[in-house]
Length: 342
Ligand code: PLP
Ligand code: COI
Image (cartoon, rainbow, N blue to C red):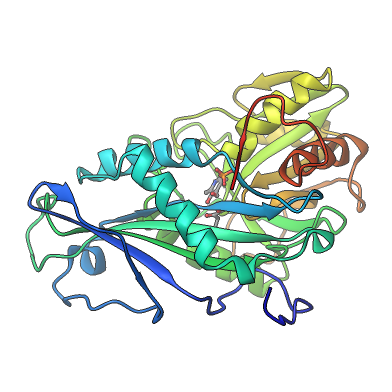
């Protein structure tokens, strides 16, 4: 391991050893290339720049208590990228190539995998873009580039011990009713970014988007929503929500812990009935939410309604967090076979 300064670890850009690229050309994926500069040569006519022809994934590698390196559920990310690429209408690497490149990227950047006692991770970001020059609105079938980049990460916004304040974005939609909400395309993040920026300026850490049709709870800009009511784990279900792999895992963990899982519509008014509320996702892991403000518009001064939760992580959220991360760090038996051990 390199002599790294791990003290500043949050969720931000840092340079690692290598990035991997692989080009789909003449109907097949070419060799995997490893390079040190984290820049590529791309025509300014690439539709990935103009038309948002890009999708990506996010997963993590962990250094376990036993010293082993574990990647959490890469098969799920591989399949979700296929669904995102299918939405865009472009070729996508199969599960084998996806996982092989993720593993190689971790191996080549193992110096940047934080030690076990920091309970941090090496974030893996697979990206798929179109690279040929074009100005037309037809999905390219050639010159598709698959890349895998990595970076060491700590907490994203808050931590499990540091709940965050959030606000409902009533005057912004993250997704359209029959749009791209359920896939991980770049455009979704473009839609969410300014709303998040406006909220951050007001002291919130994230925005909570409502469903564009029903106005029920959808999800945060960076994570899924869950609420705890007694022994029940409640999480919204809609075709505008990204199917989070963390949330899927937590639903299983909740069941394993004897909780009841409900995946259904959640009306804004129901927010007053939860004992605990949290974000879940790869970057945020579980980040408890201590406040959700509801305003007519993000820029408005007046808060129409406020929903408050414990300012320390609730017992149920903490139990879920400890179990999930326990599996990821090799402390708890991985009985569902979620981790790929390198
Ligand atoms: N929702 C959005 C909008 C996200 O960006 C993410 C992050 O990937 C999630 C949910 C959580 O998904 P996952 O748990 O698969 O990381
Ligand atoms: C992730 O959690 O992996 C994401 O892609 C969310 C992103 C906003 C960092």
